[in-house]
Amino acid sequence: MMLVSTARPENAQGRSVFSRRSIITPLLTALLVAAGAAQAQQSLDWSLEPFAGNAVRLFGADSDFNNGVWVAGHSSLAESPYSFRNFIARWDGLEWVVTPVPQPAEAVDDRDHSLRSIAALGPDDAIAVGAHDKLDANVSVPQSMRWNGTDWQVLEVPDEIAGSGNGSGAFDDVARTGDTAWAVGSFVGAGPSGPDMPIARFFATRLDGDQWQAFVPPLYDGIQDQELARYFARTVAGASDDDVWIGGRVEQTGEGPDGPLLGHWNGSQWQWSDIWPLFDSGIADISDILALASDNVWAVGVETLVEGTTTRDVAVVLHWDGAQWSRVAVPDEPDRNVILHTVTARSASEIYAAGAAFPDDGPLEAYLLRYDGEDWATVPDVELADGSQFFAAAISPVGQLWLTGRANELSLPGLAQRAWLEGIILFRDSFGD
Image (cartoon, rainbow, N blue to C red):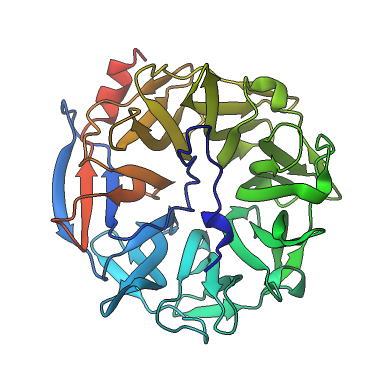
């Protein structure tokens, strides 16, 4: 099985540099965290709730424009734990409602069908995207579907990105941008030297009615050997339909550095931003983008620093002020590695970035940062089971912060974990504002 998003960069030690929606690991427990404004407390108050589905993994989340959130991912078959099916659920403010989801006609045992991202366009309108395996070939192809208020309907994928032969394609992210939606992904196919030297390319699509319109970004001109370059899209966000950012990374199999990519669509053409000077190494990835306004855009990810014979992963936060990208300081974690997968905001002065932290020889730990309008600081008391991390985030219409992720707590299969943070005021007091 060949899924585009499972091809993730690795640092010099072979440690995977995770993408927020590319981790499809057996025996993950679905994890949901909700932070709501209420009276201040000194720590998170954890509770457990039943969550429908078998071995549910959630990689996407978004507000539903009503009282809750959408979540999307996949669940495994009870009789075949390594066979996955599309999964979508909706929190309506009181309970979880699992919605029936179209499954690819090619769905068979030992095949992977997964939704990577979900975006609400209105109270009864949403888009979900991902990839599914083909029955007649060991490859995956992009898939998308739309909610009409009653059920999910499959959206046809353009021929340019549908995949053919031995190539694999996948949508990795979708986002509402003004009056429509954009989605991005990558396609892997045989390179000029054959299938043993594959290439990968970005693709971007804009929703026009119920049709996807392809807008293929140009190759990055900083690459020495484009024939061997592999482009991986991770994320898309936009302040309007004609002000759209895409992010990810490019890898070179020849000489020259790998590096993160941020590209912009201005309504008529794509242009790549020169962000490589903001990084100390050539091993980095942009995993999520938050566009609050045309002059206020945030991007998060990870950079792998080479320190002698060892490497260390550090959190990356970038900011666009309308003229240029700058790198923003975040808390230093000298004793552990940090990866940021997702970023969301209640306002321009209250932003959250989440992911995972881990020592060189220890398990993953869920990790959360908060921006108060001036500085980024670690949110205390996010203490989950070993092996936990956050993948995606959303702010509900009632102001709750929701995070989807995983808790490697095998004694709690099929449960969703909710934590009500009784302390938005405490956040502000503790960070000095």
